[in-house]
Amino acid sequence: HKCLIQRSHQEQMERARNDDHHRRKLETQRQHHIDNLHNIVAYCENIVDCRRVQLLEHFQQSYDASLCRGTCDNCKARADPQIAMEEMDVTECASKLCELVDEQTNQGFKRNMSQLIDIFSGAKSKWVRDNAPFSWERANDGKRVKVPHPERFHNYGVGKEMLGDRNLVARLLRKLVVVGALEEDV
Image (cartoon, rainbow, N blue to C red; front, side):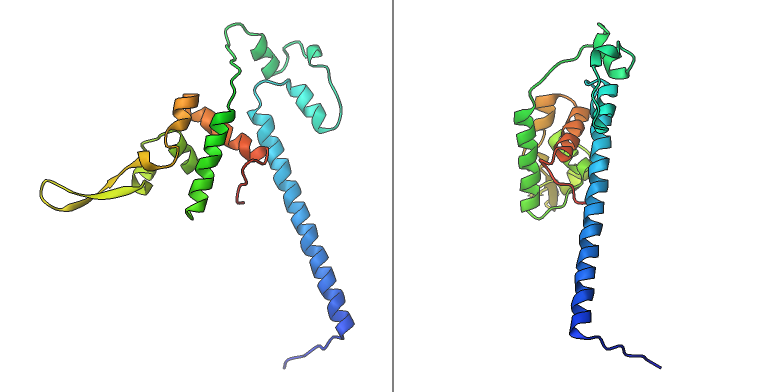
């Protein structure tokens, strides 16, 4: 037996409004959770600013970093003469990394962060070889073989040239996501 419930036009409109309100509320909650995750990543990636300042700023409170006196890992590292911290302008590198993401997206490729890091840092991984632009060439025996050309990836290896380190490329990519310069498909 099936039961058919008929609703008036007014009831249908009310239900549609409630459904729309519920969808907006869920999207707001989802965005709030993503923002919280980005804040956690930013906290973990920040190796310069006093941890106490960062934590208290999260709760809209202020703290004088000089009062920390090297008790947090960041202040301790800054005070250690054996640890060299170098300030660098990564604007151009960030711009080129955004170009790479745009170029891959415009070509219809969905790349994850690890794949983008591989391309930008000039990795010679199996994934890069298998997914690089290629050409067909004749081998000595006359057979056609697929020859990968990773250097044909847009901005291939630029991150290694500019930053010198795959880990810095990864940190920069995460920072671009956290600050909203790049959008991560969640």
